[in-house]
Image (tube, rainbow, N blue to C red):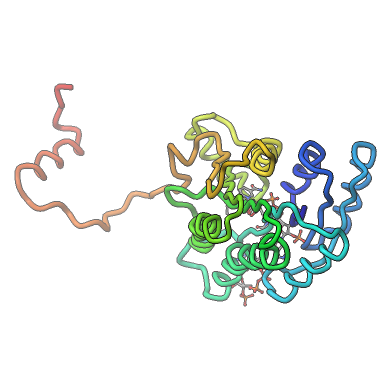
Length: 266
Ligand SMILES: CCCCC/C=C/C(=O)SCCNC(=O)CCNC(=O)[C@H](O)C(C)(C)COP(=O)(O)OP(=O)(O)OC[C@H]1O[C@@H](n2cnc3c(N)ncnc32)[C@H](O)[C@@H]1OP(=O)(O)O
Ligand SMILES: NC(=O)C1=CN([C@@H]2O[C@H](COP(=O)(O)OP(=O)(O)OC[C@H]3O[C@@H](n4cnc5c(N)ncnc54)[C@H](OP(=O)(O)O)[C@@H]3O)[C@@H](O)[C@H]2O)C=CC1
């Protein structure tokens, strides 16, 4: 199993015992993390976590990561793309370089990983790929992250068909330090009335990886307490930048309604 390390990857490793006996290969800077996971889980499983350094924004490094994984373990059953992130910024302050950096990490990096694993192993042997993103339905703060995460959605479906693999996008929301202030503000608007936690994300990923999902592909699974069905994390301040409606009795009625002078019967 190849997983890029992160908070979610740790949860996946914990649950991996239930779905496969394969090993994890971790990109990023996960040496200390791999050691911690190996120490924590050595009593539960003979499997080992092996850290392999890789910047997924670099296509050659990704291909080398896949090659090393195959020469170490001989096969890759699953790929879970769990890396990525962004910097918080209002859209109007994002510069081109920063925008491209976020798109490279979240979108292009995910594509490099999918392509390298497909070409080197899954084309011949099949497999399951899960792309983890952020649930960004109905707008979000910062167009760079939103563009990159939403852009993972369609290719996930396209590649599921083009490559005939079990493919899924797990869109997660509502946990973690980076989003804490933002999510705290919107908790009242989340149908579950609370945020999700990583322990609720990794079982969803494991479901897609497991034989229980053997006839499922190309899906997007939102693990967000219903937030993306219901509300937007964006706040819209008062403004008068929209055109007024055409003058007439309906616009007059609307003005009265908004001024509080008109009392509807219902
Ligand atoms: C916002 C709500 C989030 C909701 C929930 C989501 C949570 C999570 O995603 S949890 C994951 C948490 N981890 C991260 O988010 C870390 C992610 N960071 C990165 O992956 C990278 O730092 C990067 C891709 C954002 C930037 O990589 P870097 O190698 O630094 O990039 P470049 O040198 O290619 O480009 C730097 C360029 O980027 C702009 N920039 C970077 N940081 C900021 C910032 N804090 N504010 C504004 N702009 C920023 C900037 O344009 C930089 O260029 P220079 O000005 O020339 O340095
Ligand atoms: N935590 C949260 O609140 C939420 C997270 N998400 C998204 O879910 C996914 C997983 O999140 P989570 O596990 O919590 O995040 P983490 O920040 O714990 O893990 C992300 C990992 O991605 C790695 N990474 C980032 N850029 C690169 C790169 N260029 N090359 C290689 N590795 C890279 C980082 O490696 P290193 O540590 O070495 O830098 C980091 O370990 C991410 O896409 C995240 O944006 C979605 C919603 C909420």
